[in-house]
Length: 133
Image 1: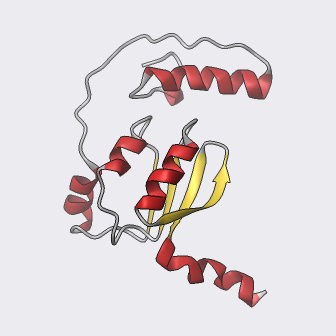
Image 2: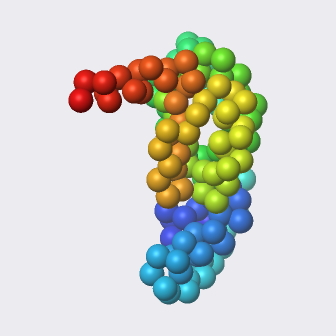
Image 3: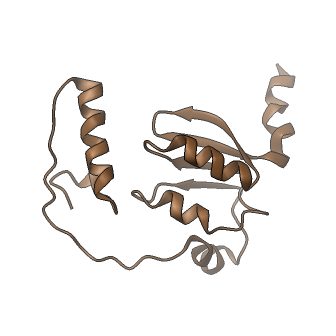
């Protein structure tokens, strides 16, 4: 845990990354002190979907797991996964694009540390808005 609760993470690298973001955005150098390391029980995303969604992926899923996004998605079978996923990718966007491309998704919108992914079989729905004008 850091002295800024919104910057807590499962990975130390993410704290360094947040320091770099502040410097890039504000010009200020910040150092976030790690005040406490805590063991936290984690669960796999498919297990959560099984328990809370009866094994069916929701149409939209937002994934912000404090540095564990890649590992969580890597183990998932997304054959019938969410139609849309907003994923916090931090500084590894290209790795997520590569991973999710193999799992049937394409990046639709990339904004700062987040990417909105669309399941490839939903491409016609994404462009439907364009056709309406």
